[in-house]
Image (cartoon, rainbow, N blue to C red; front, side, top):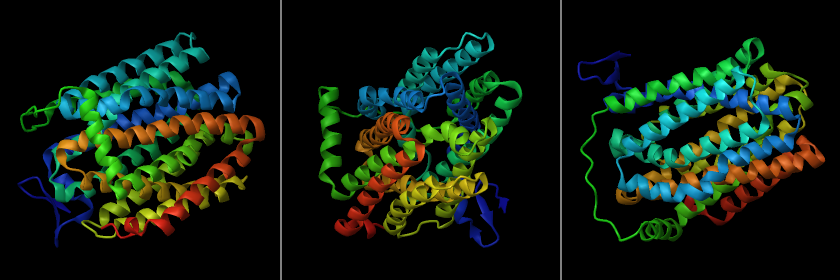
Length: 416
């Protein structure tokens, strides 16, 4: 593959379908800046979970931290979607990314000085969750400003590949750094990594922001977005699927530190490798979707992912050897990203631009809010009956919902 004088990526047969979105300069800046930042974020996320478990030895407290990180979603995310349609999205992201950088450096300082306590982690999780509540709708909607509409599915797939490449490498590296020099360095490196995306955002050449005529109040705009999402059967079904898979499936990541110690009898490195295995599977799925180019069977792949993911998690619940646990989480990560990637791309392609910020705010609200509730729920259940039974119960609920959608919503399978 070579790069032509216009900065477009080509192979000898023409445009390489996997990397269509990288033809566009703004998207390339976004891709590499965000990749660097997310690498640090995953290091911190992995280290934070294991630090919580070391301090408390409680899966219930792990769930509480997960809930604290997601609780601001319920307060701010829908309003943030309106903000993403009213204010330049790049400006919103620069502010939120700077805030998260400050929180990461504060976390490092607390660990380095030995002052860190469980209640500090709750407050930090609330801070990160608040920043992310405003960051997520702007981040989701910004993609449309970086690439033309025909390359959006590819760009979202590459976003997922970027996110999950960092999710595959960051936790493994974070686990090793934690084991050798402690969690403070994971937080410090994460703080520095935000510089990359902030610089990338400032260097983008975007069209001038034109404020649109808007209703008299935030609530009126929010109601317009909610009416659209509720009135579109396919969009409504996809949002329901994201809610269930996030709450009863993805929320399991909250328990990974406890799983590494209590079920697999491992340590911080095992914790990092479990998260990395899921991330590698997600990278494989994202690159698979990107390699399809402008394909026309999104609904079938989305349905397949929604059924296969809970089945794989039920299998995972009965595995007690690390190598088989890693392999099963790899497959589960592949299935999970089929759901989230194709849900995101489908909703964006179905939503008109003037509503996209609000609808993606609803999407992000559904995703992060359900993870918050799911983390609290699975942490409480695991504290009472153990991690494997809690995972099986959750996965059966997700499987039942996926089967119901398959039977009663054929329009989703027909989605191109």
